[in-house]
Image 1: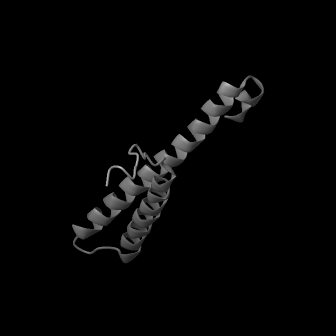
Image 2: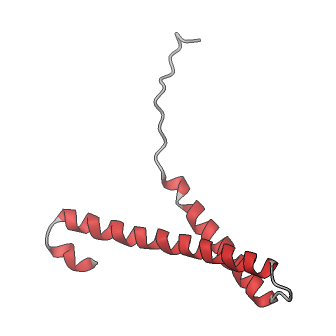
Length: 86
């Protein structure tokens, strides 16, 4: 990914956005795998406690890391407050 660094600045932005997308993909993959493991253990006759705890860990790990990125979004303050409006 970082081989494009010396070409131009647009390639640097492209390579860093690919890195961010791969992290998000990893977190969503962990989320899906965690949900699958937890649901799989719920419907088994003799659930494995280690697998169930692993699924919950993956689920919480993914939710935490996905929710960390929510605060990085820009706030859209499109309204203007005036003293005359009151």
